[in-house]
Amino acid sequence: MRDLCECSGFERNCCCENNSQDPCSTIGNIQNDLCDMKANLAEIKANLLNLVRIMCICNGCICDEEQELLLAIERGVNDATSTLAQTRKNINSLNNDIC
Image 1 (tube, rainbow, N blue to C red):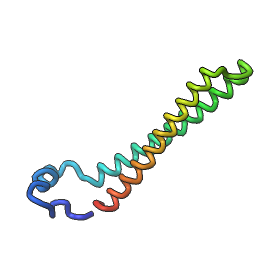
Image 2: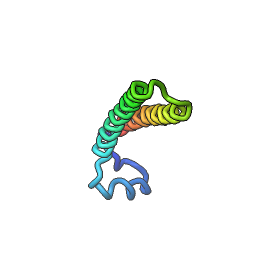
Image 3: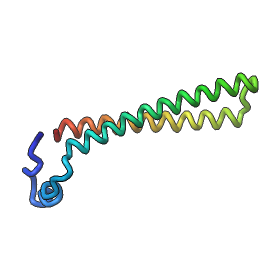
Image 4: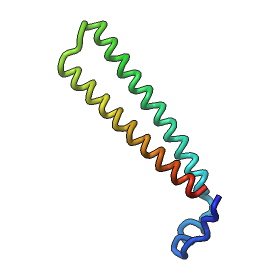
């Protein structure tokens, strides 16, 4: 790990006097949280697909309003998944720079 105390006076006061927070450990925790979020989003999408399947079996079809709502939920999950993927890339890059 790079010595984070080799920085400007301002940064030294911010990050080096409080050694209770190891940046690499914090990044590792964030990476684990993001991985859990990815799994949760995948489960939400699978549940959404199961809901559509059940609605079609029970009702024969889904009405326009239901379809619009389901598609909006799917878009939201897809957007969150995309944002999560970019955040994971950013965290991995930060991890490579610091640790």
